[in-house]
Amino acid sequence: MIPDVVLNEWYPVAMAAMVGPWPGRQTMLLGSEINVFLDGDAIVVRGAAGDLAVTLAYGHVWACPGTPAHPLFPIPEAAQPGRRLVDCGVVRVKCSPLRAVENFLDIAHFPFVHTDVLGAEPHTEVGRYDVQIREDSDEVWATKVHFYQPQAAKSAAGGIVTEYMYRVAASTSAVLYKTCPNNPDEWDVIGIFVQPLTEELCEVWPWMALFDDTTPQADLIQFQQMIFLQDRSILENQIPRLLPLDPGKEIPTQADLTSIAYRRWLKRKGLTYGAQMVAA
Amino acid sequence: MWVANGLSQDLPAGVVMAGAWQGAELAIWRSAAGRLSAWGDRCPHRGMRLSHGFVRGETLSCIYHGWTYGSDGACRKIPAHPAMAPPAAIKAEVYQCVEADGVIWVAPAGTDAALPDLGGLAAVRSVALQADRAALAAALPGFVAQRDILRGQVAGAAVALALQDRATGLGLHLLGVGDPVALSRWLDGVVRLAEEGALA
Image (spheres, each protein chain N blue to C red):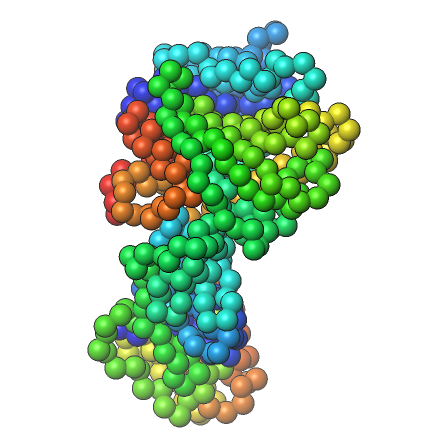
């Protein structure tokens, strides 16, 4: 039995540009089969019990299997002039959707999983940063995160200290803001929108809003795909597949403050689809 | 109880591999100096399989965040916090692991069971296949099962198969005397039986 609070959230179910006529994209959401298809000009998400509430945003189709508790989270930068919006396709991962989000919020793995790209030994230290659960927007935010990166983005020529902000915008969606190599006054924005197929299987849709007019689209997408395939080799080998929400099963440190806040926020809100509640 | 987890010759210094003790998944690794260790296949930090990790000198590191463990299982280093001494509570789950007759044997910590006596036989080769233990014993005339060891003869000489339940099937670790090439061909025949479905 899936709790209402889980059913009343928005989840990504397709890249809007890829949706075709019936049967369209045949996929799963929270363990139930759905079709995402074009009916005339409208995108419809149909499940066994009828059509789901639909929102189009950030290049993707979002569906709510219950009664939407609130509108989809805003990403103001998506409407900012001069930004290039890039849909990066999809990576299917055999893990809890919550593990996929938690990995996205983590920087300490960069030197070991994204070696010589997003991090490199001996630059492994994670300094203190700020984490808060913002009451107004009901989001988890991590700010003042700094990390040395050999090649922070496709457009970065050499190693730099990158500053990050991380934002958990929904139970299975997160957005990061990072130093923009081409424009010091702005942030590059990268989102991951995670579609929970089941509690132990998800599809990850990376999305970017960048100030980068020169890098070919294919190179940008290939860069993100490479990063997420490296992450997948981790995510499919964590035991258990579900994300443990009770303390004791996994041991965090100060570098994991974002993950600690994310787990606490999920537990408090009852967003436990993909979570393990009892220490096994 | 001791369970065979492969042959010494298949785990060189500086290498980590996946193992299994009954239902438990393991990471088994050999340090640069040759010291052998078997641990539960989970980093206590985020549950990542330690069998995907890397050996440096006398330590094993998790591939996810580089948390580094000494051969006593205690965490020695957390790269995100290089100046911090890791708390003693951060420890891999340590099993007993010894080598005898060219075979790597694993048992839970504190076991007082004796190692199976395979004296005189030499390690030949390991394979993994899909087989039922009873069907396997029935397919090998003259072989006798004693717990996890099947003993019998091949071409008139004594052999033993040490059996190991793995998540992906049954591990067979062959020991014998005589020509290792001939023994290896005999083992190929057992693998073929399994592939034909005769051991299901």
